[in-house]
Image (cartoon, helix red, strand yellow):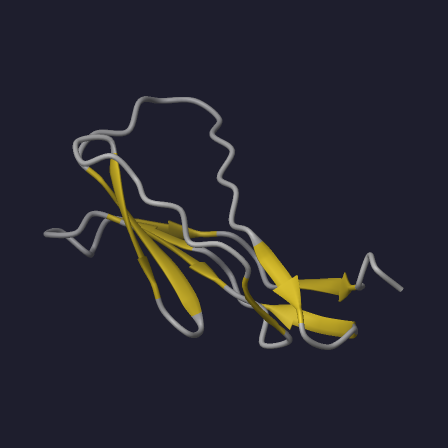
Length: 89
């Protein structure tokens, strides 16, 4: 299971459907939960389509990756500061 935090100044622009068997996504107000049946080793790129409601600097909470049935095996990245800008301005 992978949980990715969403900045509080953003909302979802699009919530694409995923194929069962590869991954399943659940969209919550503050995070996206992605469940993988299997996840091969290596680097992955995950896209989440967001739209900014406000602009400015925000703190982004770390993403969390853990075994769903063995939560003692987990890892996360660091807290990051990001700048949110509206591309239409």
